[in-house]
Every structure is written in structure tokens, then in C-alpha cells.
Image (tube, rainbow, N blue to C red; front, top):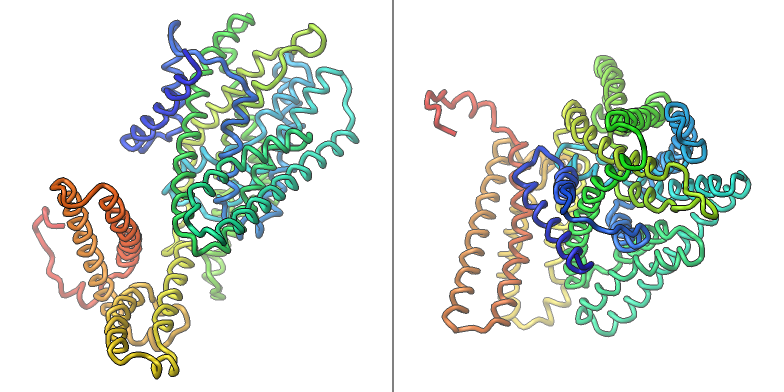
Length: 602
């Protein structure tokens, strides 16, 4: 099959599996994609793809890591840099040394340098698979931030460790001094290259858009799509980490985006484009893994006199040891206690009551162990592990084959599949046992930000005395009418968002629980009616086009305006419904309501 046809087929399968996953919410999307890929390539005449690891790394990894660096919450990432570095560096070194010795012990056929190479291959984690599994399951925000930061940085440390292990296998020598110096160069130079390219792009973009505005939004977004590839290639060209260069470029670009609040078209195009790319490339990665699995198994069985049952036992032992070392790092070290303390601080509040403190201590122990378990099973391996295994050279030096290369690739692929299956089962079970907050910290911050924005908008509509004196009387009357209409809408939004917990005592006293609920309910009904009207408007626009009274360009402009308003209203309605659900009816009203024997009543 032609390369172009293969790429198109993989992208199509990624889209189809994404739709199929909506009907199978209990099964993680990556697992569905791996199974479908394996099913397509398993028969003798199935789909077989020649896999180039370097091309794979270049095409798929840089844009995904750039997008992760661009989207990751920077405040949490930099606030939690210590635990992130302990995982990205300390845990990787602990895994490579500890797991390498264990692998050499229970698989004597693997020489010690090859065992260290395998341990380095399986050391990087994949936060994409974790987020796919834990979406909407209540993963604590700070824990997820630490795991995302770990996966961004441990790719580089794991691949650098793999480089030294392969070099030791080929040459038979190893130097700690050279290893540390090379690692510092690879990491720091990669970060510097990515940051420099990110800032250079930001300066160029600012100069162009200062003159042209949003007219050049499409071209600016296209240049951003090429930025991760440029960072990766330049980093690799100078012998640094192209992976860290792509991550640094994404983080730097996001910082520059904080000063670009006026460029709406560019922002909307960027968000839509990156969402599509992440979905397509993530699907392609796991489909390619599934497509490779049967050929890896067949090659392993043909090249070695090892039964499939022993190979399966090797994979299970390797995965168990990998997760066991990770659990040891979290549970017996300070990492699990620190992450548990971050979560428990959001649950216990600031009460000094002795009873509450006692319950908090028991709760602290429970949450600490749960967070340690969640962080352990979140150590799922993914695309970088597969690419690292396949990048191992065929020859170890001269014409001598690399020792047990097929076995190493099989064990790496099996570890990816095993950790994904175990994580898919264990993570939902553990997350359900975590205590729940009435309002998540992110939701609380978002609500207060919306409240501040609404109050600032109301205050900003007032005219200064000099402006009122210079204004035309007729225009002033029209302006005051518009202020009244907009102020009414903003007041309804403030009533919805304000719980009286922001220090405004007057508002808190004026809003009884029942009055607050009634206001929120009225506001939700208003939003629902507004959305209904927008859909009627859009249907009418299409009817006008079908009747030939407007052209296609006018239809697109009008529908785009309605779509933007609808997206905003849907988000506000979702917040309104969640907030309304957290506002119980008054006790008097609940007692006055007679019980109903009608089982069909809602």
C-alpha cells in the first residue's frame, strides 16, 4: 500500500474510533485503537506498515509535545516544579537502575547493558493516555498537573538514558562523567533552542499583526503549526533534545499569547486547529502501535525458541516490577505525602476543631495512599516508549546483531499494552474512592473570575462627567437605554455566580437560599430560551439561502456569528445548571411538598 494511502487510512480510522468510543464510554479510546490496529494487521494478508522510528518521532511527537506545553497550566507547572523534577529525573534514574538489575535477574538472556536499555525505554510515561482514561472521573487537578509535567520532561531523560545504554552495549564502555555532561547539554541546549524559537516566533507574530491585525490570522496559525517541527529539527541538529525543544517552544508561545487578548480570529483558529491535530495524531499513534503488535509477536516467535506463555509471563513480570518501583517511589518516599497534602488541603479547610482535625488526620492517611496508588497506575507507557524501542540499531558494532533486539521490542510493546489495561481498570476504581469537593478549585476560580468580569463590565458602562456634558442628548438617551438592558443581563449573571463567599456581606445578607435558587433558575430558563431562539435564527438563515435570497458568503458570516454566541451561551448554561444543582431548595419548601406516589414523576 502506498504511503499516502496508509496515512489517509490511519487518519480515517482515528476519526472512526473516536466516534465509536462515544458508544463505549467504559473502554478508553487508546485501548480501542490498539485493538482495531492489531485486528487489521493480524491476518496474513492484513495491513502491514514499514515503520521508520525516526520519521515517527519527527511527524507525531513534536506537535503533540508542543500542544501539551502550550496547553498545560503554567501556574501549577511552575509552582510544582520540585515534584515534577523529582519524577522526571529522580524516578527515571531509579527506574533505569532498579528495573535494569531486575530484568537482568529474571531474564538472564538479556545482557546487563541491554537490560538497562529496556528499562530506559519503558521509563517515559504518557499523560495523553492517562487523561483519556480519567476524563470526567475527578482526577485532582494538582496531581494531573504533576503527571503532565513529568511526562513532558521524562521523555528526554528516558531517551538520553537509552542513548547511553545503547552506547554501552555497542562499545562495551560507560563513563558517568561523560553521561552527566551529555545529559546537561542535551537538556539545557534543547530548552534554550525551543525557548529562543518560541520568542522569535512571538516577536515576528507581534510585528506582523500590529500592522495587519487579524487579517493574517490563518498564516500566523500555519507558522505556529510548523514551529514544533522547526524546534525539534534544530535541537536534534545541534545534538540536543528535540523533544525538550518542542516542549519549551510550546510553553514560550503560551506566555506570549497572554498579551494577545484582542486577536479573536487567530485564537479561535488556533484552538480549533490544535484540537483537531491532537485528536488525529493521538489516534494515529495508538493505531500504529496496534498495527505493529502482530508483526512484533510473529518476529519474536520466529527468532526465538520461547513460547508465547513465557513471553506473556515476561511482560507481566516487567510491568509489575515497573509499577512496583513507581509505587515504592511514591509510597515510601515523600512524593505521595506531598501530593496527598495538596489534595487534603482542599478538603479539610481551615477548621481548628479537634474532632475535625482528628478526622482530617485519618482522611489525610486515606487520601495519601489513594493518591500514591493513582499516581502509580497513572504510569502508563505510550508512543515515546514504542518509538524508543524501535529506534534501537539493528547492529551493535560491525556486523554483530544488537543482542536480543526483537525480545526488547516485544517486551516494550507488551509493557505499553499491559500498563494501559491495568490503568484502565485501576484508575477509575481508585478515583471513585477519593472524597469529593462541593466545588472544584478550578470551578471556584472560574466562577470568581466571571463574577469580577461582570462587575467590571457594569462599572465600565458608566460615562464620565465630561463625556456626559459633551454628548448629544439624543445619543445619551439611547446610550442610557442600552446601559439599562445590558446591566439587567449582567445583574442576572451576577446573581447566578455570587454565593456571597467573596467578602461582600451586603450581597450575602440580601440573598436567602431560596431567593438565590429562584434567581439562578430564572437565569437558566432565560439562557435555554435564548439558545432556542438562536437555533431558530440559524434555521431561518439556511432557509433564506435555500430560497436564494442570500448567497453562500453571507450565510457563512451570519451563521458564524450565531455559532459564536451559541458556544458562549452553552458554556454559561452549563455553569448555570451545575451551580443550580449545588443550591438545594429551602427546608421549609422541602417539608411542605407532599410525597408523590407517582413513580413516573421526575
